[in-house]
Length: 171
Image (tube, rainbow, N blue to C red; front, side, top):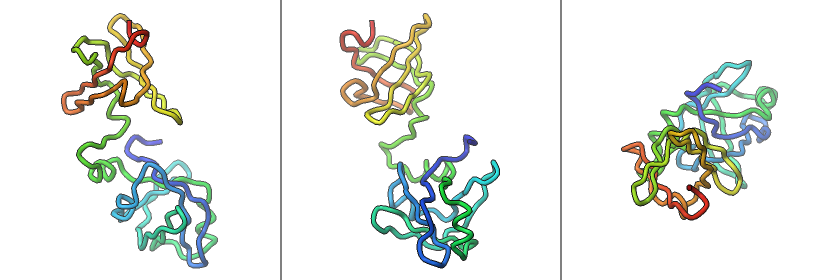
């Protein structure tokens, strides 16, 4: 996938007979979805823009009507596919304390008492919590669960995260 796009939902099915998409959405808030004027669909390895006509919410799903789509058959072409928005759209809708997980990549990791550990090189997203891989200057890798107790402070403006160095986590 292109680095310029972020998945915002999956086309589950059609809704009604007028070409509305029934969309399961994650990692997006209803307010952020409502603010989108254009949503992209990926077809044949190309991202094509669709103009949002209406978005409403029904039984935990988003129901989206696009100006370019007017029938069930057209919606079925996209069933099972993902819908995308640009990273720029996501960033402008983030609250002050929100960020993208990818913003953690290449941040410098320090213990809460200021000792340099290394740089965040990978982020493995798990159901329970994300797992950060921090690589030290010596090449050693530390796996840090990304939870508030272990990573109590982020300073993304200065490209730093702070880790509570409990015994056994970092030597």
